[in-house]
Length: 228
Image (cartoon, rainbow, N blue to C red):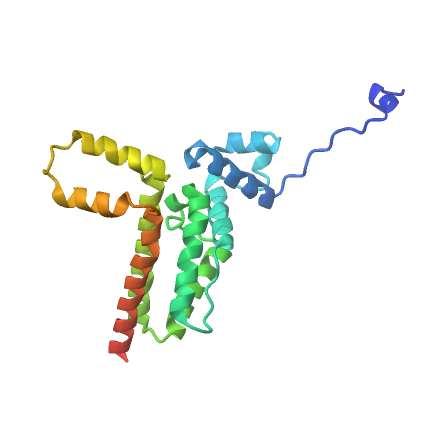
């Protein structure tokens, strides 16, 4: 029997095959769009065009999804090299982490929380420590450096993502609203900093990132020299 589709010459629509990598890719897209709290196995299955039970043929549970998503995030971050200037490598790595996490804000909540990290995650952590060791930092100082660098980078990004202003216009509007509620002269230093720095042309909170990072690298370099 000739079907209507055969008569019309149209081919049946083909659905893209579900794989673990595709599932992780779509999971990251969903988290980018709606946040990690909106990601469920059911919603992921719907986005993939399969039944929820079919998804478990490729990933055993949501924890496996989260582990894989974190691994995908680390794939986007520049891997520091043990060759060359360790400070330059740490600057590039910090800038790369910041760029990636600003693209994927949800990742900041889970990157350091997984108990079964994937190969890419472990490779990244190993490369950072290897770069610091190759730069002449002792094992103890490497531990200190890793902790303080990640605390600063992640903490700065957390603040940056949660600020109530993103643009120059929003910054000026917020400052005006706060000043309108403040009795004149009550907070002179806050007023001075805001008027003479924050409200000046070209200001952006993100510009403070490199300054703080350089202070940390200077301190680590001084500690490295004292230990040799």
